[in-house]
Each structure stands twice: as C-alpha cells, then as structure tokens.
Image (cartoon, rainbow, N blue to C red; front, side, top):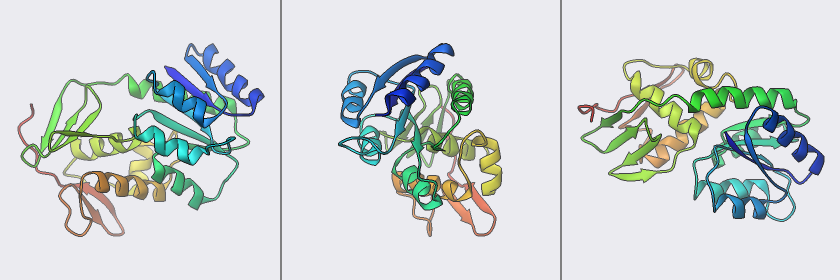
Length: 229
C-alpha cells in the first residue's frame, strides 16, 4: 500500500516508516499538516497515518481538508483517550483511532488487515430507489443522483454491507464484529458513521429512504433495489 505518515516527532515518524517499509509498503513522510496536504495534492495514497498535535495546522483541520480531496483511509494517533474526542474525530472523517502510547506492531497488524480488505473488489454496481443511489463496488464509489459523493472507507463499507444484507437488522455489536473488529471503533462510533452516511444521502432519520433505526436493536438498509447494472 501507499502510505503517508504525518507526525512531527521525528523518531516516531521514522519508526512507523521503518516498520511499514519492512512490510513492503511504499511510505512518504511529512512533519506538518501543510506538508502533508502539499504531498497528497499531487498523488493518491491508500492510507494516511496522522498525529493530531501538529505544528501550525492541527490534525483535525488536516482531516477536514483531506476529505475535500480524497477518501484515503485515515488512522489517527493521539494522546487524547476520551470517548467524546474519538467520536468527534471520527465524525470529521477519520476511519480509525489509536491512543498514544501505541504499539507499532498493532499498527502494522491494522495495516495488514486493511490491505486484505482493499484487495477485495467485485465488479458490480448496486442501484437503489430508481437509480437515486448507486454503489460501485469495483471503484469503491457512491453516486447520489449520478453525482459522486465522497465517503470514508468505513462509511462506504458500512453502507455496502447493509445494502447487500438489506433484509436484516444489525445491532451495533454485530456491525462492529463484522466490519470493524480490527479497529478501535465501538458502538457509539457506529452511530457516528450512520449519521455521516445519512447526511451525505439526505436521508432523514425520521423519514428514512435508506437506513432505518430500530431503537434498542440496530440498523437496517431499506432502499428499494433496482435491477443490477
């Protein structure tokens, strides 16, 4: 995979880069958000690993700006361990969160599992509600009224999985164990993913077209399937 590491602490940055290269990843290093944005504006990456406490532009603003140009998988490294802070960062568009001090071996394990997931591509487009929503599994793209909508990888995978299994209601625990057991996601983060998806699909929770909440139980995809294209 092609990885961009953003960490102003040179020893940590170099350590992540060293281990990643040993696992045969292509690694680029940045020591500020501004430098990272400059690098990412000129080439695509599979994974972005970033600290939040950076000189100049902070990590939260970096995530916001990256989401304007890319759906790259974002792993946050932070000393902040409060649940609310994790949820806030996920809501901004991050995909995973590791609390400092962290194990480099654990980070490498996450990258290995992510690499396996990224290699699974099935060339099919799922279409719902008379073509209003289309999910392109080959290109990992979401289209709403034929306009491509930027989704994080975790948001994409959650929407795809629910849409494929549209007759089932999934609890937060089931979603976590099926899709995110290798990340630091937890049940309230699943709620944040669903909220982000609804916002992007103009799906009102009280009058849903795509994701229905079963209070105390979980979520179900209720979009009406069109013929597969």
